[in-house]
Length: 332
Image 1 (spheres, rainbow, N blue to C red):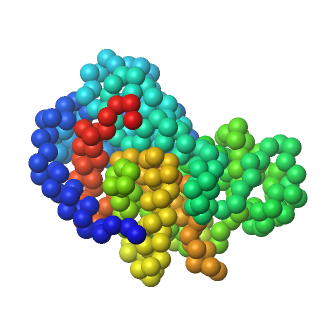
Image 2 (tube, rainbow, N blue to C red):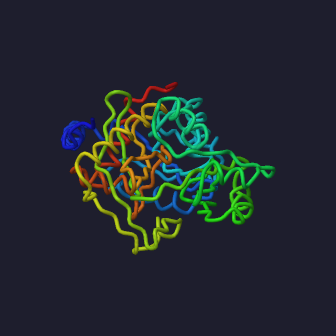
């Protein structure tokens, strides 16, 4: 069962009321990077930077796509807010460097980050913990397409195993579409996954905290035009509708929150994350799709939306996330 939502909002306000801004020191906001989500990372990072500056934090932008990350050692930062998405920012690599530099940072550690970005490894852990997620197969150029369809059914989803933001994703409706879908995904990643397409409501559940103290924030229902929640409709279109509260029954929201919390804990995530979930329209059963360990912080992003519903505005959310680096021990 998810914890009472208001408790987190009240605790954030209490934490920030006692926070000494100067104790945060010089803060680096990592953004940009080299992944396919660079543009979104810049949007997130600049939003975070602006919020921290408004809170009088000594914050500075650091674009890891334009500067070598090893230059972080010369910047004399005291802590880091990671606003990188995708590879080289959300996959444990930058986290490993920050561990070596003894720099506290926002978000999950090396292992959880590396696991969560790999959709195949993530599924294996969830399944081993008895958590519901769509059936899947790893695809190769030698896969038997008819066998894949027989196993997973149609429609099915094909996507890179290590990309986010729906990059390289194809909804396959016939066996003849599989080779092209595979080639598209394989152009972005060596590992490609196909999974059963769950038809129903698309939901997302942000999470905060760590371990048994982790909490689920309000669930958000996503209604994209023509049920197409692609890169454009995630970040640039105003056509996508977001419902928070979802309008679903309380027991459905609670089931999604409980599943998301279990998924977050199974991967060992900390500070924050966001679980994407599909609600099967026939059975009403929720299925985990993926876990984001460095969620977006753009004007269209979902964690700020859920935090607002829990009583925490964007700037206070950013400041609270940064303050959690004071509790994250290097080496975790």
